Image (cartoon, rainbow, N blue to C red; front, side, top):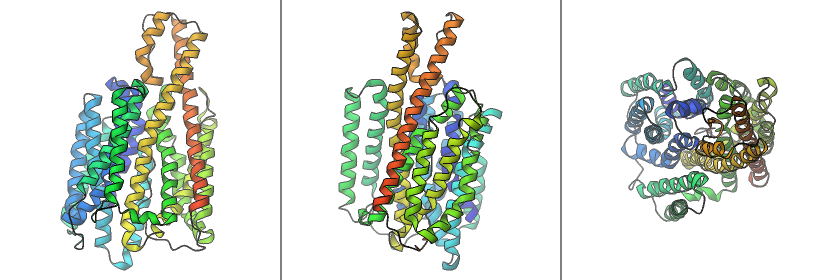
Length: 507
């Protein structure tokens, strides 16, 4: 039973990270823009974040086993569609459906564990869940890179099929149905609609502003609708009895502070590291396998040091770790600004990945402890769901904002470099349509080979410069999260380690 729930929920997390390293290859194979590849990530995260809490409510009311099974089935069908998708548009739709399936799987898996184990065994079982899901999420880039290099990017989706079959077999043969008999009232569908509409409006407006400009009527309308829907969501949740997000949990200063910290730190991760595979593969010349394997130090550090970090909580309390960890992560982001074009992995990206992994290893366990320990036991599931939804929302919005910044810096830098090498106006005009592809932009065919090499170098240098600025923004956000911890997180000397409903997931 534990294996089924861990494998099922891991599908949602491993797919979210495995796809990231395949994006540059998908872009080339489908003839897509970076904006479309961004939507491949955003569509998944959007529906997962917006529907995570309502997915938990569905399981409580109509049966966790049933909702978990439906989620697995939907996720698998969407994976097949994604693997067969002939266009970027169809791939984006498939990813959105994967997000809906994931929003049903993840909360139901934890609820099944809670209902299936005795009081004596429940804490250990629940504690096993976040450890394994975090490891599978971290393994995603390595697996994705290997599949892309040795088979095809489409196998990043097809690999879900045999895992889903195993999960469904265990689910229907070994797991009993359970519900929350005390759950009353209708599901908060209006809240789910408003949160989805709000996030969609904001993300669409921000993403498209990079190409259309913030003054475009469509962008303005999208942002206004998004903000209005989110305001309406908060208003609704504060007034109905069966809300999907009980705002009373935010009365705890530590809980509120931990979620602000989550928003900043995981926004930095999700927003900035989206662009790392494009840098490694399109600029530095790494293969997809090499780009995925580059994250192995990050995985190892978190796996090895997370238990040690948990011990620090018992000795010093969570506050110190939540001040120091994000500050170290900030240094890691700054180190990503060092690499230019070329150079050994060990002197370019490795130091940044190493330091970032250390910072996150120190941060994750204390963050989960504060989130779960700052609310009463009856609200533990809600607290976990809210924190996971906030981490996903942070990545969602940060990626949209970072893309706007990166595209603006890329265009300005490229213009300056084109002026410096005196490129003919006809060639500049031919490059215009390629700008949205960033480092994947192709120089016009049939031009002088020397000029072509100069243009390729200019494109690569423009991307590296914009990548550095995005990492700088990530460093600022991580540092701000450290400051938030300093002023908001309580620090009991020996906090009680509440069972975790899952650490927020890094992109």
